[in-house]
Length: 319
Length: 245
Ligand SMILES: Cc1cc2nc3c(=O)[nH]c(=O)nc-3n(C[C@H](O)[C@H](O)[C@H](O)COP(=O)(O)OP(=O)(O)OC[C@H]3O[C@@H](n4cnc5c(N)ncnc54)[C@H](O)[C@@H]3O)c2cc1C
Image 1: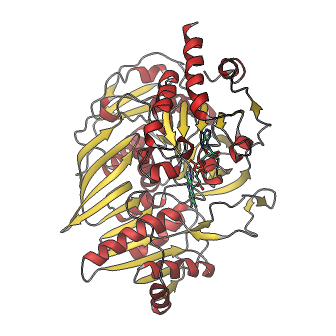
Image 2 (image 1 turned 60 degrees about the vertical axis):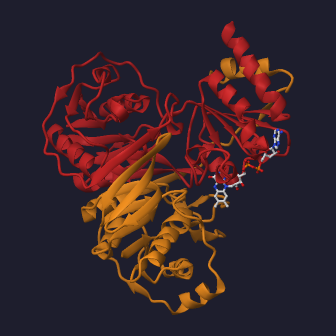
Image 3 (image 1 turned 180 degrees about the horizontal axis):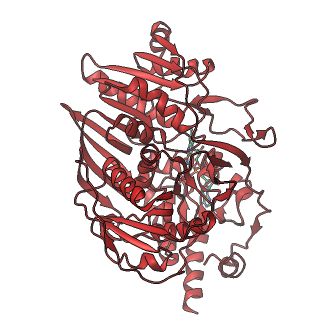
């Protein structure tokens, strides 16, 4: 018996989300009572021995050329799961992970729960896992009725922990089916942490008046090392790229800190962000609904306050 | 082209969520329902656009749900789908829904879903369907162009996008950008009344997972207001009290 974690490595680089998933898998293994925590990488990858440090007891690599294809990757992961006798398979709740989850559930005959946000429980031989539903307006606990389970793990659920030491990766041979997809181009924002994984997020809305004013938001984000986000109308009119749109019909996030400037806090916006651990709202309207969901609030003109906050952070970091 | 669009019914976005029966059932009383926005705005509209460009194409809608879902299907027909099929069952899990739909998806060139439903946010039906049908699956597509039997699809990935080419048949889930919302016009609504809507009974199967408990987030304590003149204080609170920086 084992827990298998698919450690994503876009562009040959392991992501923080992969470390999180391995530490999470290490804890799940304890819960279900197995010492075997297998981390799998696919394709060329650098530095996968550190997965041992984050909790893997075995690090496997399947050699593979070519881009992501949910069908091919599912086949690879399922073959490794069979060889490793995996009872639980964990993927990230990422673009790739989400397209693997349902496929894996069919291939492994394993019940699936998507976007889980806490460690599962294991009682009477049954796994139970919790996820956000109604766009984070509530949570639902699912019981898995099959002997095997597959989960996708929401970003930033538990931090990666150094619980072991480096392990040399081993190659494992599997049959790789022919892909019916050709990846012709991949564009990733360089340098910044993608939104679903970000611990710190600075977000702005229509209160910004226009795209030319976003400099102060970017400066604040840079000072914090945060990722930028926006409300839906701002993405709709093209002030900001679509992938920054958070909320019920955008990306759902749960950073440690969410700073919202010039966003009213409509129910559809809150739906995607109210799982954030700490929310700071900057709005000149004291009646803005967002203050009801906030931990800290500043009632003021964002054009004054945001640069002042950036300066205060600079001062704090210098100390 | 034969195009299948999977649509679901979800609570309207401003719904206040509550539960009954010891927090084991979603409280449906007073809830207004809509077609899941991703299904309607992006998947369905793109399918209808493709049909309009390729003579002889047909758009079929499919839903797994009770008779009250017919209004959603009629709306989809008014937007431009040609026919609709409802599998008469409670959609009790993503696997159940996908397995019902799979029976009617064979022979389709493109199977569309929305990127997720806004109630259970699973994003699973399309992937399960693709595996059951042994088809390629492109998730979170923001653009889809067809030439002959090859499609070029742009999909969202973390902080960016990826462009892929795929041969039909395939499954695709639609995200924002794929199309623009269409409001059904009077003519569409009238025509929709005469378009075929067939109902089929479900194939029996058990759910691999089920919901045993709902919980609501703990209520937030009152917001702490910080003096706008004193951002040092906000930084101090974030560091010392909230411990997030
Ligand atoms: C089906 C559906 C789905 C939706 N999905 C989403 C979603 O996923 N995400 C989302 O964000 N929205 C979504 N919406 C839209 C949502 O209802 C709101 O319209 C939207 O969130 C409002 O964006 P906003 O807060 O940027 O703008 P507004 O509501 O216009 O708010 C701007 C705020 O800025 C403040 N402000 C203005 N100037 C200043 C200043 N100088 N300093 C400080 N504060 C200032 C104002 O007081 C105001 O509170 C959805 C709507 C529908 C119907």
